[in-house]
Image (cartoon, rainbow, N blue to C red; front, side):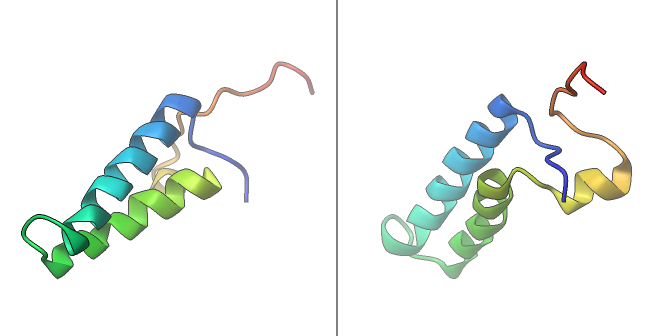
Length: 65
């Protein structure tokens, strides 16, 4: 599993994931907030399966071989 999520993308995913999970405990208290698990996990592990399938990534490639 090669990292395909860059630094900014990673932080955005973590913040969005935590915000969505907060909906389960505060606010409207809806279970739709559990959708936040997906961006939170992809941000923490720096790998997005959808990016892999599409052949894109926001992670910088190192210039070393």
